[in-house]
Image (cartoon, rainbow, N blue to C red; front, side, top):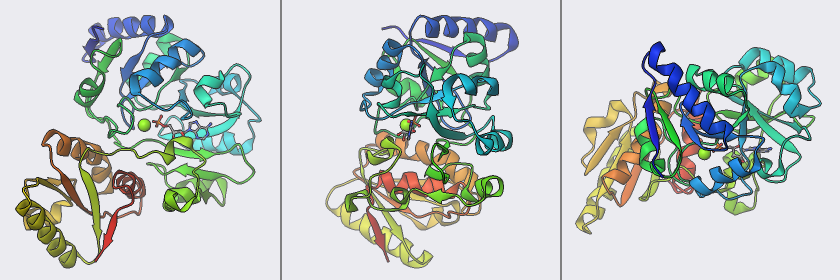
Length: 350
Ligand code: AMP
Ligand code: MG
């Protein structure tokens, strides 16, 4: 298939891009587009054949449900039932933005996008391209991240092109995304609100609006220990480059010594090594590829750069990646959640 690749640049040419994309979506096709979190791969959420194409293009397991994107809060009623005060307060505080709510689903939602669950995931993105596309196509857009399942999520159009060119109908290009990790997911279909996936909106922010908020134990826990996550997608090995990823955690100097030592050993075996570090330690490492994901005092920059780093290690064909661990006060919690999954929970405490 020839994929149309179109760049959002200025008001005059943008309109034609939105019109083309809207037409493709209404005809049951697939369009990738930027959101504030990562690039999404969109299809008409209420068209089962269209959403089936998302699963095929991404090679995504069919039990991993999709998030439905809307552009108008009034549409929430059309997709979900039992919309209570908690939901209304959450919408007021965080929408449009990087927060997905799990709610009891309305009849019109096909089982194919919820993996057969009686709940549906809904988000209203703040990115102007995503919002315009939903408004102009006049549909609800089911959109997971626009990567092949298991690969790091795309934060730039070139990542989408790497994974999806020739496979989907259209890719809308814009700059690098703002946040760089996927939305926070909160389950409001149950009595006590539970975070199913950490993201840019933190537990503390949610608690200011909702009171006590719980965290799905599977987020921190080791899935191998038998804790099954409530968000089906969180059980898969995700976000991973082809290399074996190992997180080294401990005091700064110890971490640097151990990573340099392990790197030397692997290089003696003839293997290629990548290191992921904060800017402060960048100059202290020697390896085939050293990638700085921003200052340890700038969690937003860590989030924006994480997936790009993981993709670069693939491009450079490294065999091993050693990574420092990063602060988790804000969006850093989401960074470490994705990194730990990329590492398949391999953490070396030194
Ligand atoms: P992605 O679209 O790739 O960001 O992944 C969407 C995430 O939302 C996956 O982890 C899904 O398992 C999760 N999700 C979607 N719908 C539901 C739902 N109804 N209940 C729980 N988790 C969901
Ligand atoms: Mg994804």
